[in-house]
Every structure is written in C-alpha cells, then in structure tokens.
Image (cartoon, rainbow, N blue to C red; front, side, top):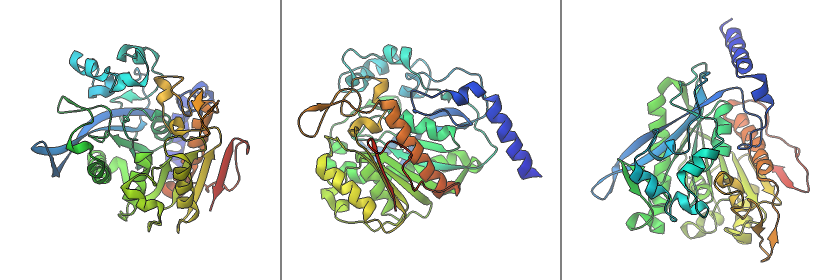
Length: 387
C-alpha cells in the first residue's frame, strides 16, 4: 500500500508540474523536462588532507536535485558566482574579464547572460523526499566552469538524480572560495598537479554531498561523469575502484592527452561505461577520438559508444547559452580537415546525449529499463553501439 501511495504521489506531482511543461522541449536539454522540479544550491567543501597557499583545498560546488514543487523564480546565472543573489560588484567585474566568464563571447557581461538565461533550477528549493536519489558527480573540462553543463545537470535532476559538480581550482576558468576569486595560474595549474587534484576532488565532492544530504540520497548508487579533462578524470577515478560507483559517462575524454596517455593504452576498471565523442572534435583530435572508442570497445565491463557525426568538442557543453556561435560543435565550426562544417543543431545534440546518457544511468543505477540496443536516432547523424 505504501509503495502504491508513493507511485500515486509521484504521478500527481508530475501532473501538477503541468502537462504543458512535460510537452515542452527545453532548448537547454533538447528534451522535455522530467517529472520533477529542479532545485539548485551552492556549497563549499573542504579537503583538510591537501594544502593550498597555507590553507586546506576548498571547492565551490553546485548541487542540482529533484525539488518539491515550487512556483519560485528560477535561479539567475549570476547566482552561481557566489551562490547567492546579487553578488558583490568586484566578483562580477572579475567574472567578466576575458580570461574568465567574459571570454565565452566578445562583449559578454553577467547582465547579458542573466537577461537570456533559460535554465529552470530554483535556488534553495526544498529537496523532494519521496525517494532516496542516486548521486551523479560531474567533472568539467579544462578552463571551464561548473555551471556550463546545464544541458546535462538539469536534465538528470529533473529525472530523479542528485548531480554535483565542483570547480576544480587551477583548472576552472573562474571560481570563488571564501569570497576570493581564483583563476588559473601558479602551482595548482601545473598539469601533473591538476591531474592528481581533479581525481581527489571527485571523492571530496561525493563524500561531501552525500554527507550534506544524508537520507535524501542513496550513497550506494553513484556515478561519475565528465567532459574532456573531466572525461579523463572520470576514467581515472574509476581506476580507484570506489564501490559506490555503478556507472561512468565519459564525454570527449582526453585519454590520449592526460597523464602521458596511460589510460589510452589500457585500463582496469570494469565499471559500466558510456563513452561519447564528436566526430569533428578538433581538441582531442583523431587520436583522442580513437582512444575514446578503444576505451569502450576494449572495456571488460558493460559499455556503450556514442558518436555525433556532425559534433565537436563543445557539443558536450552548454556554451551555446553564452554564445550561439561558440564553435567546434556549436554553430559554424572548424573541422578536422582544416575546413568548416555546420554542426547538428546544438539542442538536437544535447537531446542525443541526454537520451542515451540517462538511459544508461537508469539501467545501471536505478535498474530501470535496459541500455538501448538499437539506434534511436538518424544513423547518418548518430553512431550508437552497446556492448
């Protein structure tokens, strides 16, 4: 009876979210929202075991989650800067510099981003407590920012996942710790240091979010996901054999570029792994794409491989929200042969990533449905293989 009542409440919640909402395709995720409202909040996590500038390493971390129904206004982009509305003027000015958030487009300002920000997550919304939610960690790419992957984080949260992503200090283009702006540079930005820090950061984020949310999450059902340098971070973390990790999603992983390419030569993890690439990726290139495909085909556990034919490196980001012509997979882009190509519409690319990504996580974390065996999209645009 209790289970039946829970199912009825879930159905009612989905209906109360609005039939129109369920039928509306999001330009952020490329798909209709899931049955849950989305909440978001910023927390700061501390790792006492690592020291930086005479103090413990601290991580500005975002958490997206299924929320109780709310009519509150969605979070503005500027709220991500410090985790609160109306961040200090000096923080905004620092964010707008060309080597920070302002570098996503010429003349980009935080006000411009706020004016067009289409995301739906409500800051500080109450978490939905009908279930204990699986936890999905996400690791951003080099020189990126934790809020720049909303296509993935919001989609998963709306379908019943807690998604957590930190800025990796030294690798993130902008982050704020204890009210102080940190941008790349110095010891923390040396390649070997970033590689070791990133992997350690994933554990800090998982431990911290699980501790913070307590009974609202299922600590035994976790996944690690990431893009580019974060895709490598995902693979490297899986080598640690954390028993909580039940699935991994590697988006355009820099396996051939990071840690002297060790993971492009073989790996030991058997964690179920989905590898995604864009065929025209000019960052990891032909060698990187080949290494990514090899990771999937040579994997000793369940695996799947997704390739977006007219996709690039930035296909696996939400940089289109800053700049509709960002390039290499978003708007007219450089191709591997030195020319240019017109990518598949970015909303369609995100739909592909989310359709397969969520199905993979559902199968391995929730035991809900199976990993698709057949391609659900146009085979001339999308390559899909499940092993």
